[in-house]
Each structure stands twice: as C-alpha cells, then as structure tokens.
Amino acid sequence: MTRQDISENQANLIYIGIGSNLGNRVNNIEIAKFLIISYGIKIIQCSSYYETLSWPNKSNPKFINVVISIKSRLEPKSLLQIFQKIEKNIGRKKSKKNAPRECDIDIIDYKSSNFDGKLTIPHKLMHKRNFVLIPLHELDKNWIHPKSKMSIKKLIFSLKKKEITSIKKI
Image (cartoon, rainbow, N blue to C red; front, side, top):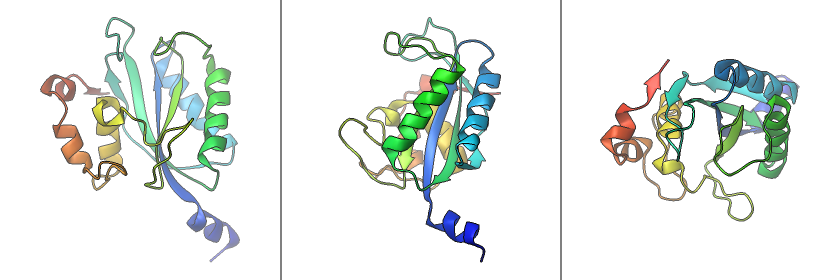
C-alpha cells in the first residue's frame, strides 16, 4: 500500500450537494468540481444531473443539482470555508437567503456524524429536499440519516408525490 493509499483510507467520506440556477448551470457545477479538486479534495463519485424547481420560491429559475462524494481529512468548518471561496469565485454574491445564484455548495453528510452549532450537518431540511435525496440515493442506496436513522428510501417516500415526480434527470 502506498503512502497516498494510506492517506486516502484515513480520509472521511463526505457527501456534498452542488446546485446552480443562474448562468450556464451545468458549466458552473463543472467549474465547482474542478475547483474542489484543485484544493486537493478527491471526488469519488458524482450523481447524474437533476433539474428541479427553485426552493422555496418556485417562480425563480430552475436549478440543476448534483450530489458528489468526496474524501478529505479536512474538518467541516475548513471544508465550508473552501466551498464558500468556490461559490464566490463562480460568482455568488451576498444576497437574500435562497435567492438565485450561480453556485451553491452544501455539506450533506460528513462521515455519518451530527454537527450542531454554526454549521449543522446534516442540513436540518435535507430530508425534505428532492434535489438532495434523489441524487444521494443514486450514489448510496443504503444511506441512513445520522439523526433520524431513517433510510434514504423512507426519506424519499416521505416526500409529497409532486416532489418526487417534479425532479427530472438530465
């Protein structure tokens, strides 16, 4: 086993969501993935691209979202700082909460742990968001919510039927 293999084995498995609803949405996500790699973070898998209505204001432009799995030894706060730099680099500006944006990166799961405080992982509303649950299910059909202990399948089936049918794989 090489030194890099040992290092990767000790790294944490983390799921993150990336979304965009302004500009060239797919390109924005690809740039975000490239920039994540440029920080030395290894991308393991990437879900398909999914188009969804904006949340919570469905009249805003539609989002394209993916979920990726990464490996990193960085702590959540350090990852968050990197992701905020990437969002800003791609064009995100400080604006109203949930306003349209070129790039949004969220930590969905950090080695199946709970973090509360300034940074809450998993996100307190992720269990209600089709654009997180369905791509995450694509990557890990056996994922269990660290707080509720509900399976990803149960979480998806707890969504309203409209939420399940309104998401489109592209």
